[in-house]
Length: 390
Ligand code: CMC
Image (tube, rainbow, N blue to C red; front, side):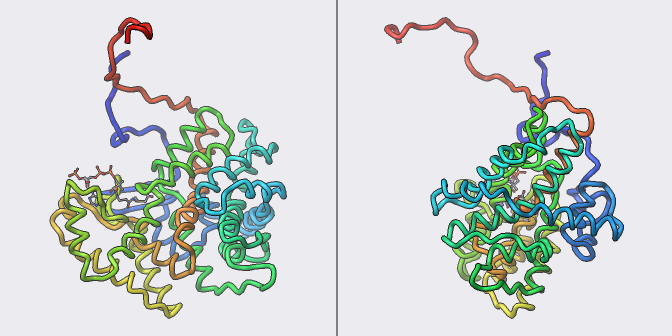
């Protein structure tokens, strides 16, 4: 008692055992249930990867059909949730809306909040995976003053999300398969990443036996910050601010200056001391998507040049700072017509399966309430001073 390991930021503390995702940061390896992310990105799709993360194995064709059918059944939200949105200001950030609405799901779906019942846990997982795109699109529609779109369950997961984002009741949405495939890849690349800040938050909240909807709302809050999921939005803002390849050196100098709080957004990672494998896939996808859509975005040129310069600069080389998943994702999302404020929301949609898979893994096994200790550095005991003597 009284002697603890002091590990701020948990750089060397394993808080749980897990069988879901493996990362080898030194070599830039990311495996989901043993399968390399590069292979999943090439051959799988988002919902199949969800199945893999949740159940541990790739589904058979029959299992996949059944899984997709069940998720599709849950895409609609309770009608009263629609009125819930009206309580927000129109200019609210969609992440603020997501935190509130997802937390509120526990008030609507009482038949999936008994965490001791595996059926409840499974239905909660399906509901969250299915409803996140609906809630995300509703957050966007609310912000631009357009009517909410009901999901169209004849569309696949990602096309349906785009339909709810960009369709309106007066005009049928016309979702290009190129765009839907790119969207799906982005969801897939964000599906899980072991014990990152948001997943650890979900586990910590879950360890008190809180219901899954409340736990995922906690995860969304943790994801929001620019050091985590908010980085994709910050990258695009940074690239816009740089504006031209000729200004890159100035920003590199700022990132290296200890007296300047500026950091190169989309660079560096707690675990990867090599290329983030997701960034490699993302970079290739950005090239493909822009070529397929015939878009020539100078932002991509700035990003590529920035990467080249940083990868040769002693500061970044010595500190092993490489592009992370957020570096190129914003460029693709922008090409797909997704507004910047929705970038982190999209990260949240993709990551939902990771959060719920980790939560379920914990609740299904043995666990204790998470309760870190501290090194107390405050006053030692002293006597109370009455107000007239202060
Ligand atoms: N630009 C400039 N310097 C950096 C950067 C950067 N992007 N990232 C780290 N450093 C420096 C930092 O100043 C520190 O230097 P020193 O040792 O001299 O004090 C050193 O590198 C180590 O940084 P740290 O902050 O101690 O590392 P961390 O593991 O605590 O933080 C990080 C990791 C991702 C928060 C950080 O690299 C960062 O702020 N990156 C920019 C934001 C970003 O892209 N976040 C997305 C992360 S990946 C996806 C996700 O999780 O959502």
